[in-house]
Length: 211
Length: 293
Image 1 (tube, rainbow over the protein chains, first blue to last red):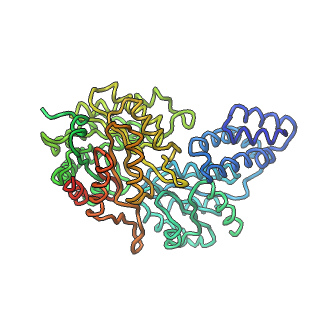
Image 2 (cartoon, chains in turn red, cyan; image 1 turned 90 degrees about the horizontal axis):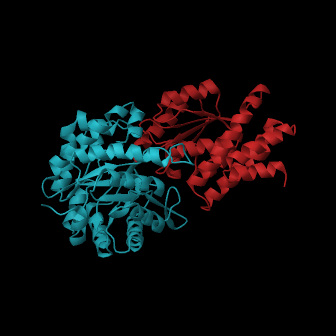
Image 3 (tube, rainbow over the protein chains, first blue to last red; image 1 turned 45 degrees about the vertical axis):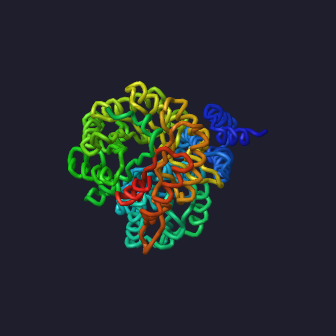
C-alpha cells in the first residue's frame, strides 16, 4: 500500500496520530505539500463523506476524520503558504443572522476544507452585510449559508438579496440546514441546496467551476 | 403532598407544555436574542407563557432555561449569570405551575462535542450540567429534563450530573431524524440504543422531543419504538406540530390542535406516559392535547 493510500485511510478512520506521521513521512520523501493534500487528505475526506451520505457512518465519524485532516493541514498550511500556493476556490461560510447553531455549518466547512477549498468562516449570527464584505475582501467564488431554525430562514433570503444587490451576480450561493429545502432555495434565488455536508462538496465544486 | 412525577405518570396520563421560544418571539423577543435574559428582563412574559400552558391543562411546566448552561451563556458573554438566571427560571415556572403542577427544570445541549469529536471531557461536561441543575433545583424544580440531545454520551452526562445534584426524578429526551427509513439522532444513535443509554445513566423517564422533518405519522412510529425500548418504564414524547412546510414563502408548522390531539390519543394508547409539544406548538395545541387525555 502506498503512503498516500495509508494517509487517506488514516484520515478516513480518524486516526490523527497516524495521519500526522504519514504526512511527515511523505514530506520527508520529498513529496510536495500540495500533492499530500490532493492525493492523501482529499481522498480520505471524500471517502468518509461518501459513507456519511450513504448512512454508513454518522456525524461522530465525520468529526473525528475532520480532526485528523485538520491536524495534517496544520503541518501543511505553512509549507503551502511558503510556496505561494493558494486553494483554487474560496468559500465564505456562516450561519445566518439570528441563528447561533454551528454544527452543520462547521461540518460543511470541514468537508470543503478537506476538498481543498479556501474557507473564510464568519461564525454564527452573521449579518448580510458581513457576508457581502467578506466575499469582496477575499474574492470568494462561493457563499455558503446555514440555518437550523425555521425562524431564521428569512435571513437567508435577506442575505441572498444583499449579495445580489452588491453586484455580486456571479457569486454562487449555497444554502443548507435542517429546515432548508430545494424549494426554499429556488424561492429565495440561491444557486444550490444540498441535504448533507458531503453532497455540499460536490455541489460546491460543480458551482465553482461555472463561476 | 403531591406525588413525584415518576409516580404520577404511571398512574394517569400527563400533559407537558409546548414551545417557549416561538411564544417569546410573538411577545417581541428578537430572533437570536438570548432567551435566558428574558427571565430577568421580561419575567411577566415568561410567567404569562407558562400560565397559558398551565391553563391549557399542562401539569408539567418547563423552565425557560434551554440555553442555560455556562457554555451556552458564554456565547452571549453572560456565563456568570448561570446560577442567578436558572434559579429565576425555576421560580417563574413555579409561579404558574401551582400546587398540582410540576416544575420541569430544562437543560439543553451544551453547544459542543465530547472528546474525541470535540475538546470537552466527560468530567468537564458533567460539571457544566451540575452547575445549571443545582441552580434549577434551588429555584424550585420538581424534576430535571435533559432534552433535545443527539449524543447519548452527552445525555448520560446530563443525567448523571442531575443524579449527583438531586434526588428528584430525571427525564432524558432526544431529537431524532429519519435517515434511510430508520430513526436515528444526528449522531447516528438508534432509538433502542438511545433510550437504553438514558435509563442506564439513571433517568426515570425517557423519550423524544423535537425532531427533524418528522410527520405526525413518524412520531407515532417513533413512539412505538420508544415504548418498546423502555420495556415498561415511563416514557415521554413531545412532537413538533408536524413537519415544517413552506406556505406563501413562509415556513409553517401546520398541524392543527385537533391533529395533535388525535396523535396524543394514539400515543397514549400505545403506552407513552407523558405527551407534550415542541416546535410550532402553542397553548391551543396543548389545550387540545390535554383535553384528549
